[in-house]
Length: 217
Image (cartoon, rainbow, N blue to C red):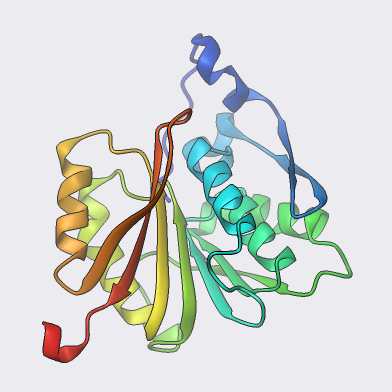
């Protein structure tokens, strides 16, 4: 997830991003995530896309129990924590500046009796991918990671490397600009892509992608 400089924003709708913490109830657990917009920008606040993703995971339409799961651009770690509580063996990743906050949130919120597990790990898209097993993940999660056009080729490379032949890639995002739709078109060259959920209140879409078989390419 990209880091941006802190800019004080007076809009009431964005005031929650400046709070030092955010509280949620998912998977029968109370979660309290520390936020730090001032120092880390977008990587250190909980965005609506993460909330909608967690709501979708709670529906149980994607099997997580015992599955190898990886979250990209995790930020505060909410999605990865919920995935672990729901039984996933989760690797929660982001760029180096976000890792300390991410690790602290995971440690503070993952219950000791969680059926799943969570490991925090560094991952900058496209870099050192050999550290991660090719095709090693059953579920790949990304909340609000489709917004910087310069990162699209690296994100695609990373998804192609990580996804197993039958992996489910779930992306929660707003469609803000034409470039966001363009990314879905890029993804569709090597993955099937379908809209599986829309949260009208928050204007968040969830797309599910799966690798195309060689004969389909």
